[in-house]
Length: 226
Ligand SMILES: [Fe+2]
Image (cartoon, rainbow, N blue to C red; front, side):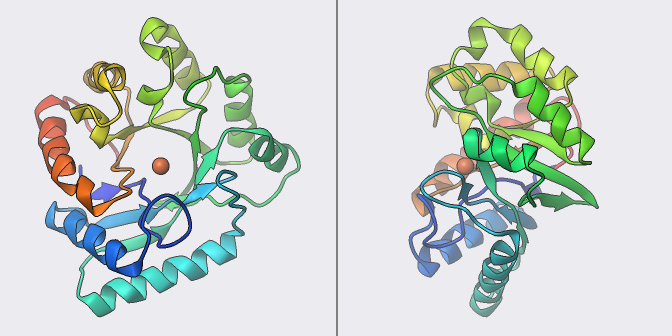
């Protein structure tokens, strides 16, 4: 259940995650020690000035795979990206541009991060547009979305529109504040998460991640896909 990590910032030097190959190796080794067998590299896209071509992401992912192999870290790395929900993503979807999906057992998924401090409009419609292209829309860490605890019906409405949810494991142990901690625990116990990820940015977060893995095992009452 926790053997696949679908959200991480291990690709070095591209965003606010890993700042060097040394940090990448340290984080990957930490994940492997926790029992993770496959990690998706999901650098920010349409944020922090990043506009990655899917082929460029494939190339960089291959570089990380070779780096880890050379360091003796036994973990599979796969391509992904974390897309910021904003004008550039909406233009890319409506314009039919190729999207940096992550592939899970033959299913194309798009990991999307909503703005944290302001309401997002059109979420249902975007989910439906992605589904029409044969892409599974996945919301990154919905528990971090402002105000969700006061409006739990919104989470249900997003799921009804086809969105699937990815839990940030670190939310369970308060890494993103008390509200995200509470919401993550409610959504998890209600069985509303389909994917889990660390959203790991720094080697220093590995201790908290170990506690988060333990919390997940204690709380999860249903099968989480990946
Ligand atoms: Fe992230």
